[in-house]
Image (cartoon, rainbow, N blue to C red; front, side):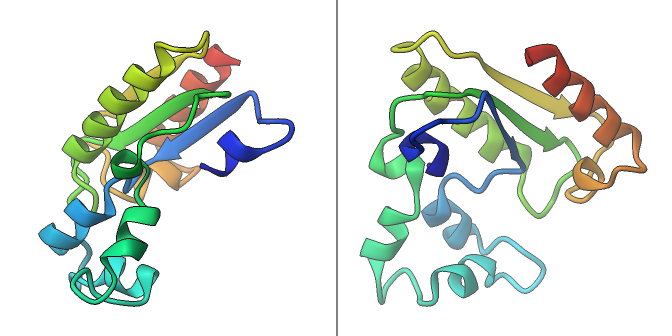
Length: 135
């Protein structure tokens, strides 16, 4: 969302295991303790639904896509399940249809939540290559 408002948007935004629907994530109680979204927002969904809506680009409506977007997830991710990335990809694709930007989904076989950001893993190398292909 910050890239959408930037004076000079980046050429590429890489969303790794994006929690693009915080209401859904809170409803599912994602994270080891089940309170990651509540900790991030600072309140429960019942207490401040307005904060959840404001922090949720897929509910508020995606802004005009001004950067290429690579959405990445590990297929073994239990912290942020792959269906969340797929849902974000579908919504971003709809928004990108109004612009000349690239929107791609990168699903990494055998990768958990952390493998995609650990530079020592093959998953990270694959993500890096996909980003370079877009650039």
